Length: 451
Image (tube, rainbow, N blue to C red):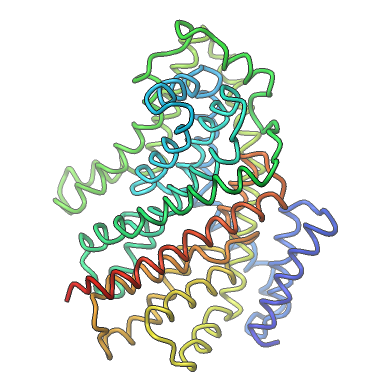
């Protein structure tokens, strides 16, 4: 079967199993991955299940430790009152009407050095605490985190996608950071405005998620300030891993191969940084609630139990995307786009969007598309800086996010939304971000070509 037909069948399988038959998302995504393997002429029958298992394991290896530890940090932030403390300070500084802007800015800043998934895990407890405290705008709070975090994760190094694009297309990393951050500002603001619109139009219930119950959240939100930890102490589990990971990025750029670089490579690894942050958050919870080791262990087991399902669903989505790549879907989409002689900015944007739709990973979409477009940029240099080609590709990689994107499932699970609610909010939000990024890129390439 041709790769494009395989893509169509795979999309239909996922939608039917999850939306029509109400099948568990993990089982549905694994079934879809197997379906792709069975239909792909490039994958022999005995290799189908090993290929699915290998793709599942690769994704799980990248995300499992981070998700588990971030879930523990989130629970500690909520139960200790640290999330509510941060919320109260934000509300006092910005006023209740601007609470969503604090989450937008936090997501924008933190997702540069830290993966979006991790940032969302760390900030969604704050959104839940704000909802309990204010009694409204939960959808706005959650979407604001995404509007900030998804942009810098896609456009600004040192996250893997932008770094790979800069290297492949031949863009200086500093230029990529500056232009990516500039293009990202109107993207985030457009996403925030769209979030306000959706918050007014959709009545999304505030549901319990794995962790604290709504009754426990209500009790925490109405405690006296004297019962909450200090503001700086409350920020430590969020700020500390960001500093550790960022320090590694800076040292590797300034003094690669040095003793300091070897040390920060270990200390700044996201898995280790989150482990340290988890220890800090557990200490804060123990001191605040006067808990013993056995009681802390019970809290940890609860957090890890909730993280387990998310890890399974996320890795299954990655396995589905991996099988689509192995079936040659990405290569077929690239050849189709080049045959039609599309302008380079539009080509990068559309091709990245098709890649994203096909296999779910924005990083894979950026890496693959930049590899396809780079020879075109080298052979026929455009009348503007090639950094704009990279930002166009990054914008396109936000388009078409749905059920084969791990971010979709993390957004859905941690927010307490249904699949339908996530499709109505997450998918169009990322489309707004991507379209705004492409329009901003096109305008800057015209008025500020940087050549």
